[in-house]
Structures are given as structure tokens and as C-alpha cells.
Length: 507
Image 1 (cartoon, rainbow, N blue to C red):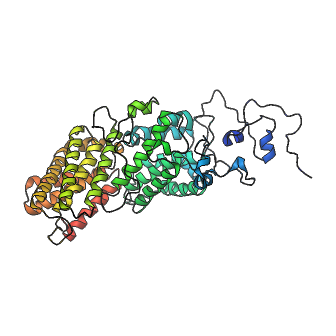
Image 2: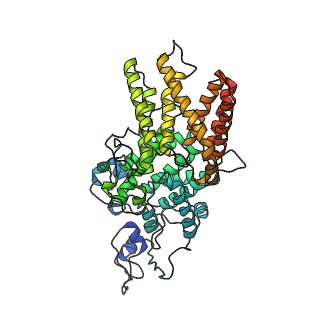
Image 3: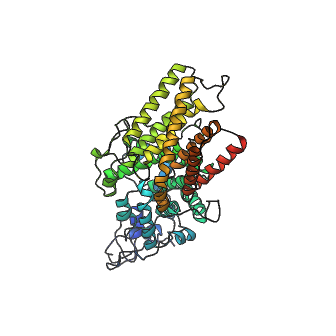
């Protein structure tokens, strides 16, 4: 007998649309006991009524049943497939790319807990990680993601999971940072990606996973994950160019959020190549006229405007946000890595480009508040870039038969610069160590490489002329790495590299 396609006779009207129609963004006739659309498609029809006396703080974060796939038509088209086969269909629409969902695994809901638990670790995230990697809109997070009437979504659950992952301290009883939370995040990310869920929240989760892997020296996963984030961002049309985005943001806050996510990927993509300048970047070079992240406080409060942003070529100033300064330094680091890995045969051009980069880096450092505590992340990246720029000139492997240019003046200058940087870092470390130890959870992972290079320089200096001051400086720098290792395992990996260098006499 053929089933009727209309709701039962005598159906009453509900006070609000059903959750199924709301999730799919379909028009609901509010019919009871089932609306017409749910009755026609055999969907679960639920009219959830919010308790006005409960803000949802103690409600659980339930698993979500997948949207049935049995009746595929134009109303339930696979949007990611449409995007990649013919993106023009979506370019002038405001279709939510995250309408598809999958069940949230029980072990994931157990880790993130209920809404109260999410609020607690989210507050910790915004107090710590957000201070130096501000890629999640605080206002949108609390106004929309934790709204009492919002529907549980797999991409949001993944983001919550990765926020909890990145604030977690590394285990003390083992050197292995691949904790159950990390493994759960990696597995769930794969499931969400495989399901075709395509949203900014998934990309933000991917960035946090990549950051965790880079900070804890989980390789080659960090390198691969960062590349995956770049491809995912390109798929979403997020590449620093607002015109290329598939889903156009409604507000400046949304536009700023996508820009910050892109810059985070660019920063990670440059930092991950510090140890091997010849690697190709996963992201294209930003244009000097591209906008940097806007004022951090204004963005957190949801009042950012087009006038709050500067471009890459803008001179560093006190009104620029710390994240904008970091992005500017990372862009310059990218120029350095490209320069030192170039195979140009024009020695004069190579020297001129190198000296121009040297001057620009010193100017950025001078503009940074290097007296701040802890040190400014922009200055940290600039110091790493300077040492990477001059290392080819002073490496013990350079000889007249090598591919590198050999010039006594350049070598002497390079040695002077790297030694001056190393002495400055050693001199300032005792001032910053107590605060770093007190606020370990606030520390970014950017400084580990800089301190490692300073130790390498000091060790090289000691091989030439050893003094009590230089030996004491070495101890201070090594202790700084140990303290950083309490937060980021990569610092411990650098200590192991120093031991390997000593054994092999590589300086």
C-alpha cells in the first residue's frame, strides 16, 4: 500500500520549527505530531523546547544521528561534490557547507564533556593559546557555538576536542606526546573529513592539531598536517583573498576570522621549514599589500572594522596587534628561507638580497617591544630568521669547493650578527626564566628554535675560545630549553639534537 505524503489529518501547529528542518535549513510547516517535510522524507521530527530557566550550561553534548542519505535529490545534494565539480553554482549563495553531519563518537563526547566542561576549557583556551594564536572568534564561539538552542554538530565537537588538546600539558611520565586525546582528535578529524564536512571549524581544528604536532615535534605528521590545512583552506577559498571565498562572510568579524586562520597556516608553514630551508611551502607567498590580522581586542569584542587592519608592507607600530606583528615576521622568514635555498649563480645579487633582508629584519626587531616579558613573538621569529640568513656563511661545512659563496667579509659579518644575537638571548634569558616557569601554559613554541641556534653558536664560540662567561651562558640557554620542554616537547628534541651534534662534532 502506498504511503501518504501528507501529514496525518487534524495535525496541530507547533510553536517553533522542528530541529530536523532547522538543521537542513528547510521551511517547516510546524505540523504536529510531524511536519510535512519530515513525514514525507521519513525524518525524525523533534520540536525541542528550550527551558527559559536553564541556559544549557549543564546539558550533555549528545551524539548526532547522521542525516539520512537514502533520498538524495536537489534538497540534500552533496555540497562539497558540487563545490569541486562546479564551484560557480555556490559562488553567489549563502549555503551552509556544514549541513552534513555524522554521529559524534562516544569517546569524543566523553573527552569534551557537557556544556559546562566545554565552557571551562574554552575559557582556559582563550586565556592562554588565544593570546598568541588568536584564530577563533570569542564572540562567535559563545554567542553561537554554545547557544542553548544550537544543534550538536560534528565539526563543532571536533573543534572543541582540538581546543582541549592544545591546552593540555604534555605528559611528564613519557616523552611520547601522542596522548589518547591527540589520537582521538586525529581519528575524528579523518572521519569528519571523509564524511565531506566542509567548514571553517574543521579547518580551525586542523590548525590546532598541526600546532600541537609542531610544538611537540611529532614529525613528519606536523609537516603533512600543515600541508593538509593549506589544501583544505584552498578548497574553502580561504587564501588571504576575500574575493575567492565560496561562502561570503556576513560580517567583518567573520571575514577577520578567515583571514586569521589563513595567516596561522602561513606562519606554521614557514616555521616548520626552519630546519630545512629547501622545502617548498604549502602556501603561496602573501602579497605585500595583503591585509594583516586586525586589532586583537577589537576582534574579540566583535567590533572589528575594515580600518583596523594594516598590510604586510606597513611599518611596524604600537597599534598593530601582536598577531599582525607575528604574521609580518613570518612573511619575512619565508623570504629568508627562499633566499638561502636559492641556486642563483649571481653572487652580487645574492649578496644584495641578503643584506636587504638583514636590514629589514633588524628594523622589525628595533620596532618590536623586545623588553616585554615574555619576549615578543615577532622578535623571536626575526632572530630565528636572521640566524637562518647568516648560517650558510659561517657553517663549518663551507669550503671553496662547496656550492655556497665564500667571502671573508660576509663570513665575518655573519659571525658578528649571530654571536650578538646569541649573547643578547643568553643575557635576557635569566630575566625571563622565572616568569616563563610561572606561566608555562602561556608560552608559544616559537622560541625553541631560536634558543637552539643560540646554543649552537655558543658551542662554536667555545670551540675557538672558551671562557667562564660563555660556559655559564650555555648552561642558562640549556636550562631555558628544559623549562620550555615542560610545555612543548620540541624543546626536549632540540636538547637531543645538541647531544647528537656533540657526538658527531657538527658545529
